[in-house]
Length: 125
Image (cartoon, rainbow, N blue to C red; front, side, top):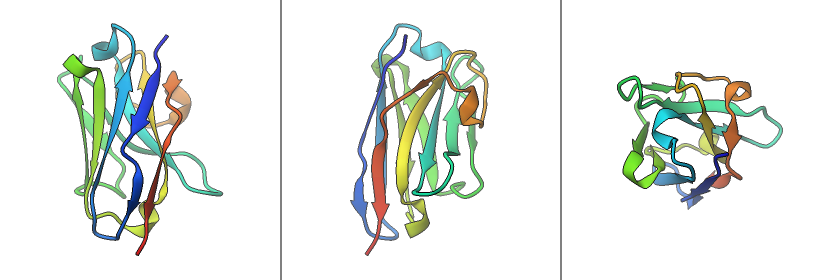
């Protein structure tokens, strides 16, 4: 069983930055793929970014965040981060951290095994 706890959300002005953190419990953290997803009111949960470790630290991003967001992980701290720069109002959503057992780059939320409770990010002036 893996438990995930996100932090770092908040209110930020357009063009600003935030860094989200997700701390995972469990001794097999380094073998999991870790992903960030987001869900805005009235919309489906959507893929943001993912990172694996067992296959050489590969990453993937949604087109809407490429060049602005960076996903990274610190296996020693069982933590995955999402650095968000140049934030836009359309980035406003609840952001969720997720873990996937096979360690594969996957973008569908249905394929992830464990989820955090979410952290709110609001981009507004």
